[in-house]
Length: 342
Image 1 (cartoon, rainbow, N blue to C red):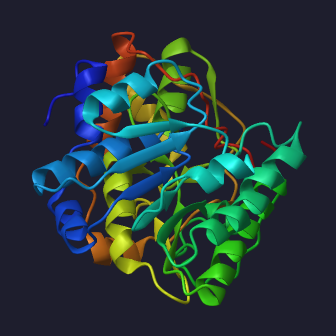
Image 2: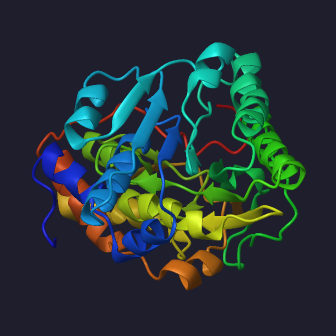
């Protein structure tokens, strides 16, 4: 598709369209799939992508999406796609114990925003819950969503942190995410559970993400913050596909993989591109620092190939979506935050 999706239905279809790589992986990893924490920004489209791929393979394996499901309409959308939703609180021991066994798990549960005001819940979700889940599903192949926030800020223009770079989380959210990784790494060894730690930086689509945050500010004439002047971005459809393909690469000991786009993108340049499309001169606040929250995604590009949608296309699509008043999720990324306060 070269034109921008014209509706949420078109957007959802694109975000959940299985790639050949996903089909190959799920052909090699049969059995039921649990998506834990599936009610967030990525979970529904990832679960539907898995369901569509399994259907194309002619198999009857179940895709079970588990979440509190606070956003209206998500459960109905999953049911219509053939995904089985389970509405529950994963911190409830009885509810967790009652979940069915599965051959594979995509673990997406966690909390970021609200950490500043309620850090105890963030630590419960990001550090305690992984221990409960890893024990309940001991031995199960698991892809664990994490974040590039576990890395320190590194110089712009450098290679960026690869998977073996020393971690240096800033703030309680990032610290709790590192705790989640360590818990799953422990159980990968103790319970012989194949695990892959999926360190994702800034998946974007047309209703949320760094491009929506930046383009919306330009369109409204608001200053674009430059405090975090450079980012890595990846199309959410590619992030969904890579997460499912990572089932092939879960291992004991656990494997760590950075997943994002390969380019270090300038926020100033992105704002200027939106400005050219909107016919507006972007305004800016602050200046670019010499370092930023970045990741080196070379290894994941080697494994899965280049992104299927270019940054230029994503900017054009996002601008079109914003100009025509497309629905937004209303969840700013706060990518400009440099002190880890979310």
